[in-house]
Amino acid sequence: MNKIKYIPFLHIHPEMKLEMLNAFERFYDDQDYILGSRLEKFEHDYAKFIGANHGIGVGNGHDALLIALKCLDIGPGDEVIIPAHTFVATALAVVNAGAKPVLVDVNEENFNIDLDKIEQKITKNTRAIIPVHLYGNPCDLDTIEYIAQIHNLYMIEDNAQAHGAIHVMEKTGSVGIINIASFYPTKNIGALGDGGIITTDSSELAEKAKTLRNYGKAADGQYSTIGINSRMDEWQARVLSIKLKYLDQWNEERIEIAARYTSALKNIGDISLQYTMMDCTNVRHIFPILTKNRDELRGYLNSKGIDTLIHYERPIHLHEAFSQLGYKKGSFPVSEKICETELSLPIYPGLKDDEIDYICHHIIEFWSH
Ligand SMILES: *Cc1c(COP(=O)(O)O)cnc(C)c1O
Image (spheres, rainbow, N blue to C red):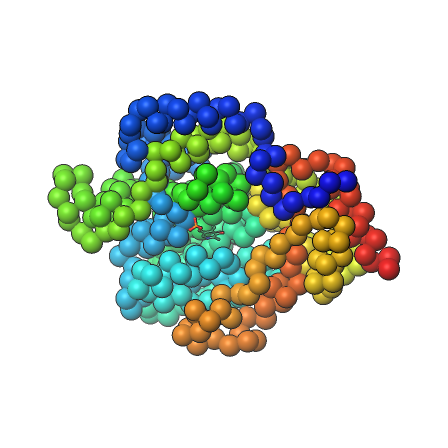
């Protein structure tokens, strides 16, 4: 068996290469590099895919969230509720908007924000809740939306890891008032570089987002507000339009890979797996297993030529950058436990059955020693 990489980009659908090279030639010749027709096309196609009226392409997922917060006039003095276990970008965007992230622990079974712990964190300064569909797994949006409504808060979905996931008949990323996704290369649909998008049904918020991403320049050409420079490149929009055609099929493959892992690993050692809610489709951005023997298992798999990663080494509150939030070790025990025990197994479209079986075989072998 050859070495199994965590994500071998060049192995993913080689047939796409010719399509990309042709697209690059047209891109080069068209001399239209920023805010052109290809971005508009991708924005339209992605919004339609997600089930939103508008898409606004931006430089990356962090900026998408920053702009979404600014569209809702969330800033200094405001608090925003986020899960303690997420990628740093979720917390960073809140801080960069001038607001304060208020952390809530995650649920032990689905690894998403713990529904029973949200309300106790709501204060008179709370403006929004940002559910993160972690590892591709939909949050319970009905309950979160209900909590948001009774407390008069906005719900903003961080859909960076769950493009195409389904929450009871609707795509995740289409339920909040304004929502974001990232197209970082490793995501379920990734650019050849950075990219992100804001989606919303509101024409007013969409106009605001377009103004904010382009220096604050409004549709009438006037600089009407303090914006930033964060526009999705035409080239990345072209790349993403090509990849969008394959997204559902790739997600299907991820789901099949996860099912094969699940049936082999569900009763092995002390392994626990991520639970997906009924009527939801988890698009398996990451396949996490939790085990107390994480570090030893990781070393063992590495010695067998199997790459793994950890998502994430620390929860938000234990990063030095967020020490000013005033939390300490022990503040969010479930998030801390996940970070201490999580191991991400290879999962990508094109991973073969015999490779999955080889990985599972060695995980089972590890426990027989
Ligand atoms: C990837 C990611 C982002 C944003 O990523 P960028 O690298 O800025 O595109 C935001 N939130 C989550 C949960 C992510 O995984």
